[in-house]
Every structure is written in C-alpha cells, then in structure tokens.
Amino acid sequence: YDLETESFVVSIGFDRSGDFAIDEIAFSEVERAVGSADLKGHYNQHGIGLMRPARRVTHTLDVAWIVEQLKDYLCSRNTSERFRALRTPDDRIYGRATYGWLHRYFEHLADHHDSYDIRPIHILWEHKKVMADRARYLAARGLIDDAVSRSLDEIALDVSVTRMMMLKARVMRDTALIERVGGRLGEVERAETDLLEILVAQLDPRRGKTVAAKKVDGYPLGSRRESKFDSNTEDVCPN
Image (cartoon, rainbow, N blue to C red; front, top):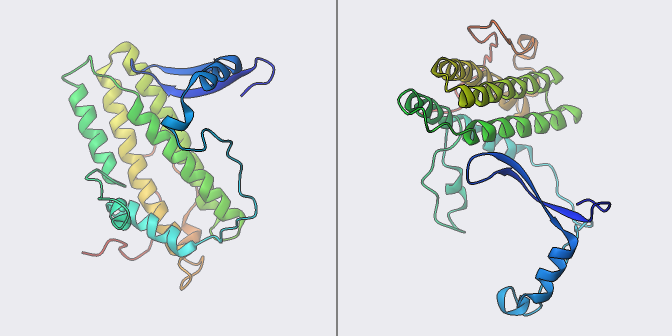
C-alpha cells in the first residue's frame, strides 16, 4: 500500500492477455466496497477482520524436512502425496520434471508462433530466486557452504537472462531465440542438479559440510557447455 497516494497494490503479475501489469485500487474504493458488502453472509458470522502476525509463535528450523523437500524436487516426486490425509493428491508435474515439460512447450512454439507465453519461464525465475534466498539463509547459519549459495544466486541470474530472451522472442517471433532458451535451460538444469545434490549432502547431519565443498568453484556462465560441478554424492533417487 501507499499512504501518500492512498492506494493498495492488489495485483502484481500477468493479466488475461499475458501482459505483466500492476493494479492499484484506492482506499476509498475499498471502503465503499466493504461498506456495501454483505460481509456476514458471504464470509462468516463475525464479518471481515484484520489479520496480524502471531509474533509469540516460534518455529524451529527443520533441516531434515528441508532435505526431504529437496529430494522430492530432485526426484520429481509428487509432494502433494505427503498431505493425502488433508486432501486428494494433485496429478501434476513436480520438481525437475518441469524442465522436460518446458522443453515440450518450446518445441510446440516452433510450429505455433502465436502461442508465446512468458508466464512459465517467469514462474521458473521466481522459483530460482526463492531457492537462492533460502540457500543464502542456510549459509548465513553455517549449514551449507557460501559457495553453494553464491552459485544458486548465479543460477537465478541466468534464468533471469533466459526470461528476457523469451520476452524478446515473443516480440520478434524468433524461433532461433526459443532454441537458445531451451539449450540454456538444459544447462541450468544440469548445473542445478549437481548443486542441489551437494546441498542435500551438506545438510545431512551424518555427513556435515565435507561433501565436495572444494569442488564448487562458481556457476559456469556464458560460454559453458558442460557443468563444472562434481557432486560426488550417492544417488538421492534410488529405484
């Protein structure tokens, strides 16, 4: 919200036409809407209320759970199955398997030049940013090597560049750019897989931070053709 303009930012994202947009609404409009709405009938018997953070609640960092989630990602497991007691699992694509579906989409674009959609690659970029933020937090707590965190930062940067390439391809309808996007993401997937295997090993309380830390010498950008990482870890996805 912005107190000077007296407005709320209610949406930052893509609209129905696929364009990135920021929508704002005035305080006065919200006030009129709330005043004219049947809040008790539509929401609950107490009407609308304000939410405040429960600052007295604490939550201990669960490293074992982080490891399980990372393994789910690396093995493309259906994470929703972990919550089957609460809801029916979703039949969707999870983890690293999303890269394969992105490549299928890029192949589709080669024959359908009118269906450029920036949203999948934008969401992938946001995901890499969040992964990098979390790795930075773990590194600050001494749970993983700084080199792993920095390399995930560079992966997020590389996906950001790929996103810009996709935007350019959308404007120019350039199939060659789409092929470059697909190739670049393939390299990202390989490097990310090696990095996350190292991260899982470093978070393993049985092994500590001794696994391949010296091998992580920075994410190879630009002219790379093969990942320079050596994860030196056992298979995290046994058959």
